[in-house]
Length: 333
Ligand code: TXA
Ligand code: MG
Image (cartoon, rainbow, N blue to C red; front, top):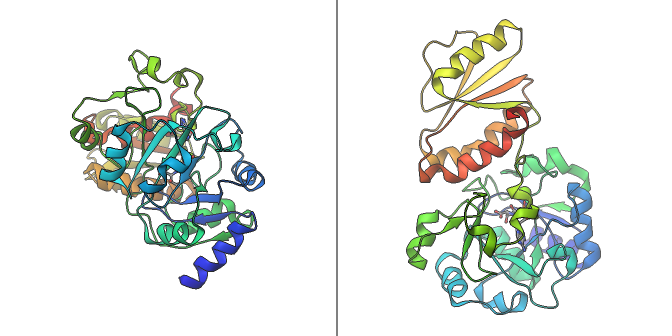
């Protein structure tokens, strides 16, 4: 791997892009201090230029190179959860490129918990800007093959570090406007953040919550992961209760559509034998780990519809439900 890290380093230093594994999903990285390199990320992803990128750093000691007016809570969280699946949104340091922040006055920072990402960051010695290594709006990659399939030749180099341990993106918490606000549930449980901060967190997604007053950007949807339709497969995807899914699967099959039903932890009785059932784990963390890989493979399997049994709405399922709602959004309207 050391030779591959060195090759990746050369690509980054010459302004190219490197896809690399993290514990959450694969990132599409470029030198966060090189505007031309950062612009390539947007081009490859087809991402609107005003959607900000996360800067990946080696450790909490580098926080003040990228942010200023850092509240104590941010230091506490970084010390507790880094390296790990937590992205902190803070006031940007003046030198942070507009290309990174989308012109906003904040910056997203994360120290990933993966040996390959850590080795790359250590060798590079500075920040690596990296969104998930997928086209805009699509499912994030959890294996190097997913990146090859979707972005292939466009990426300078792909580092293969195996399947991602968590499989869902990081939790994003804004500390930029005083009170902490959850922008995206993810790899670190909200309860763990609350226990460390000794306070309840508000979730900015809830349009009626007071979170918006602390995070003015929410209303403008400048966090692409907060857009209603996102993380989506190409195949139409629907969410239904176990009860309704039987009817829906039968109806679509009668209309000659090819359907697969993703169930929770067991097969659903009453669905005809000729309809494929794909059993997903009944436990939230494991479900989150398997979700994107399942969607990637079923998306390529020629189905007309992916029908998913809705998981419970308890807090442990927050990140999974968030991604499912967005992935299914276009077919829910
Ligand atoms: O787990 C992850 O977070 C992965 C790995 C590669 O680190 N990265 C990732 O990046 O999911 P991306 O760009 O696909 O999603 C990051 C989200 C985006 O929705 C982006 O708009 C938001 O973070 N974001 C980044 N900087 C921000 C900022 N300054 N203010 C608000 N949102 C920000
Ligand atoms: Mg993404």
